[in-house]
Every structure is written in structure tokens, then in C-alpha cells.
Image (cartoon, rainbow, N blue to C red; front, side):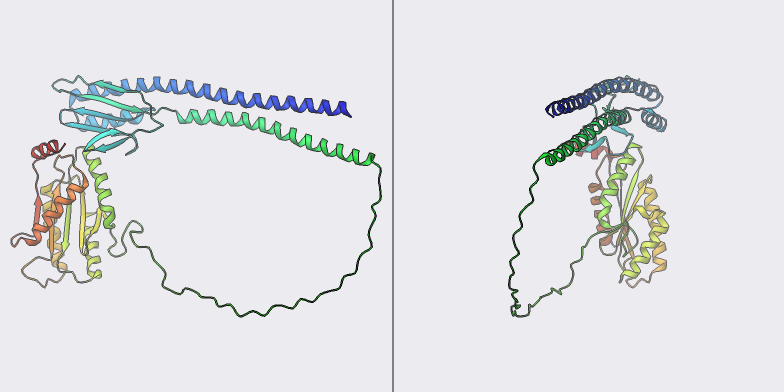
Length: 398
């Protein structure tokens, strides 16, 4: 019996040691393969960066930051398996190109900066761009540190090895449990069997338990009005069927970044209906605005009876012309009780080649609207900025 127990204990110890070796092998091979994969990723990123730099030099000599240059850089970035974003610095500012918007680049004081992520490499990819007649031009990039397809494959294979070790451990424990039970049964049979002595049952008197008299319990139910959450729910407001006012700044910030990267203009219109008396009339006016400006996603509520409109790719003069036509359209549809003032007052401001935040553009348009509401001659006021003076103002602030 002792010989069998020693033999069984030796086999279990051997299997336990074998499982430990399997686990250690799985972890060691996974770490080694991931290390070499990261090293290979660095080499590929360096090659991709050299290729993108060559494309920037070639198309930059043909026309720096023109439409062909921008499309070529976006195509080169999309073709790269490692480079996530590129920032190109020129005499007039910095320009960002990303595979996925806002994943690798953030804007700080109207300047693009790379985001620090654990998945990004800490290698410094930077080179000057010696383009003819262009001073202080350079390019820098950020690359992904891991090839997640390869890492996923390595982890899956490592998991299979670990599962094999767990399977061996499980069946070993099961076998040990079964053998242990059989040993216990044999030892019980070999012992002297003694019939247990039973005591005579003792009769007990049954006691009747009377329930205690208790007073009826009073339950108080709070029947007060239920609290309801307030705030925007869904994409569009039920009051006007256009965007909630709280979404305006975030959407405007996003559109400003997109227009800045493609060198397009953007105009913000803020209008107020001065002769509206109920939500039904306001909703009709909002529907007319959505139909006229052709993009409900870029229309938002403003105050009680106001509407904000984001016009992408539209300069200030064109926006003023469209605002005049919309004002005439609204004046023809709604009754006008106050003859001294139009039914619709409008304020406008545009990006006009500036790198600015949504908060600033909203402030300029709102100031123009307030001026339009006070002006006795014109109900449409446009805030027109000087880009050079604005850049000097921003430089002085920094």
C-alpha cells in the first residue's frame, strides 16, 4: 500500500513540474516574440517615414499645401501600416494629417501636438524639408509601437499552450481525487464493523404556541412626483427638430479643425426671430432653415427663439448673401407686427484663414447679432477680421 502511494505521489509531482515548465515556456516565448515584433515595427516605421518625407518633398516643390499636396499626404499616410499622424511645419503655420481624427493629434493654442499614448512609439521621427523658396519647413511623425494583428496572433498561440497545461493539471487533479476515494473505501472495509447502539426514543409533549397579538403595521408610501432628468437627449431637440444648443461648440470645434487642415473657410451664422410668439412658429422657422441651408446636422438651437448655422467651405460674403435670401424667405412666411424692425436679425463671422477656437467664433457672431438687434438701418451684421492683425494679437497673448 505504501509503495503504491509513493508511486502515485511521484507521478503527480512529475506532472506538476511539467505544467510549470509549460507555463514558463509559454510566457518566455511570448515575451521574446513580442520584443522582436516591436523591433521589426520600428524598422517598418522608419521606412514609411522616409517614404512619406520623399512624397512631401516632391509635391511640396510643386506647390506647398495646395490641394494636390494635401491629397498626396493623406494617401501616403493611409498606405502606411505604422505611421499614425504627421505634422508639417511651414512658414505660415503647422498642418496636421491623421489616419483617424483626434486619435493621435490634439490642438493646443491652435497648434497641433501629438498625444501621448501607450500604443505609440517613443521614437523621434523628424526631418527638415529643404523645399525651394520655403524656409523653416520640416516634418515630424508619430508611429504605432505595436502591430496588433501580430500581437493578437502571439497571444492566441500563447493562450493555447497555457490551456494545454491547464488541461493536463485538471485531469491530474481528477485522477488524484478518484484514486484517493478508492483508497478511503478499501480502508473502511478492512476495519472491524460495529453495529451502533440506538437509544430508545423519548416521547415529548407537544406544545401549542399561540401567536402574539401585534398591532397592525402602518406602511407609508412616498407618493411625491417623480424626478425627471433634464438636458439634451438624442441628436435633435423635440422642440425644434434641429441640434441641441449644448452640442454647438463641440461640433463647431470639430468643423474648424477639419477646415483648417484642408485650408477651407467656415462661417458661423447666429440668427434670432424677433417676432415669434410660440414654439410652434419656432419649429416651422427651424424647418425652413434646415430646408434652406441643406444640412440639419449643422443647425442648432440658440436661446429661446434663435438658430445657429455652421456653413463649411463658405466665405463671409457668400454667407451674407445667403442670409439675406433666408431673411426675405422668413419675412414672406411669418406675419410681422413690428414694422420698425425685421422679423429676423442675423450676426455672422468667419474663419477667414485664421486658426481660432469655436468659443472665439461664437463670441464674434453673437456680438454681431447684438449689434444687428440694436442697429436701426441694418438687421444683418457681419464681423470681418484682419488675419494679419489677428495673428499679431494671438502672438502677443502667448
